[in-house]
Length: 95
Image (cartoon, rainbow, N blue to C red; front, top):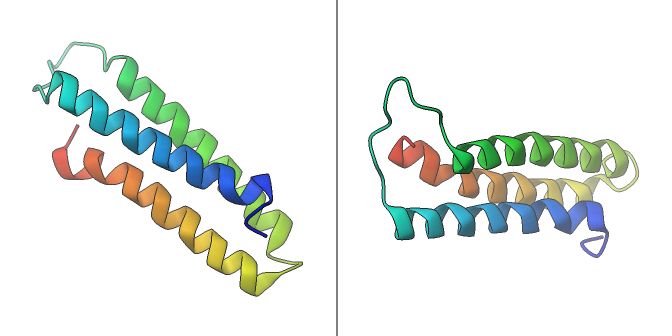
């Protein structure tokens, strides 16, 4: 089942955004946000990723949970863990 795109693409997206966030932090560091300033491109990309990630995981759950519940639950757990891992720098560092 992991060979299905709806199973591995959300995991790959989570890893890609995690690499993006860590690379951005390594290159530009962490700065205190200005109250009136725009969030910036990295924040917008993260927000778009969150929407896409949620929709892809929801699609996977709706498509595969009724047909193969045990395998789908395992992959769903991996997808959610990967998404939380990608969100962790934002939560921990308060970006």
